[in-house]
Image (cartoon, rainbow, N blue to C red):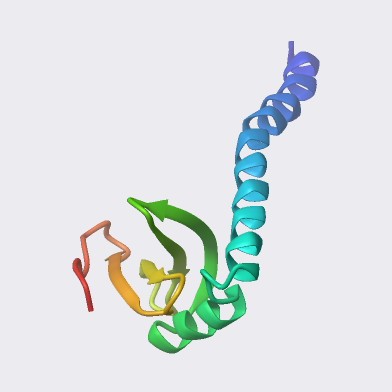
Length: 113
């Protein structure tokens, strides 16, 4: 039974990761096309702004279309252990929203900045 678990667990984990990887590939291609057409700033520019706005380690980056507005969502963790989601207008680089939790799962700032 343990041998079967040892074989199945990696397969289950790999299968669970495949849809996320496919989404990441689509995000990457959509972001590249938006950049080429002038509808989005390069990711490097947005990451630099995120680091200036909230220094910390980048955990995740998403490229989303929210009701016709293209946004970058950057998830960071601060030196204090606070997880923040920063949303930026992809075209202008403006910070639209900050949501966060401290280490205790409590909410943070909501709304536009």
